[in-house]
Image 1 (cartoon, rainbow, N blue to C red):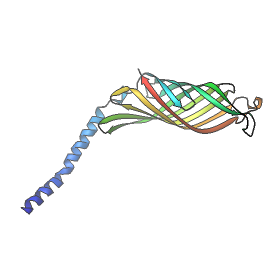
Image 2: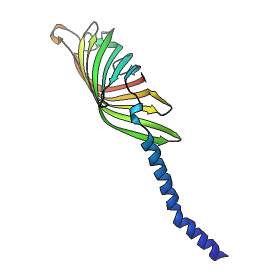
Image 3: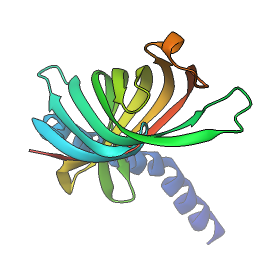
Image 4: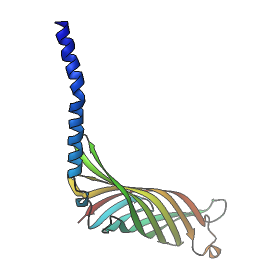
Length: 193
């Protein structure tokens, strides 16, 4: 009887890789059947937080997958009126930031019975702040946008990178800082049509 159990165990041990390869082939076929062109196509409008403020973003997806965007957001500036930052003022304004997102790649994830499409972009943006103290900015980020199979027209985006900003006429201003650089982090939710 022990030899039968041994043979049966050996049999199942030898054929178990066949079942795992069948599952892997099935998973690859399911992923191949997903048409990534159905996700996030056409135009979108969305809302953003962080980055340069709270606002709205509009995008146009180009034929090659790249995106052109325009972000309009409400922003605030904490401005030091002297070098010691003892006298500071808060000014609100509006940021106008156009950008171009270069599609770097996309990946299909099959997680916990949910299929997701993730697109990665290299994003270049340049903007202008209309406020009491106007300033210009240049931004470079890595952008990630995620879509779910259940709702191909809704995307969640994350931008992470660097921002440089500077006053346009620093000699006319007696404010500090006049220019600077920092980390750029933005979240957005987009609705495509």
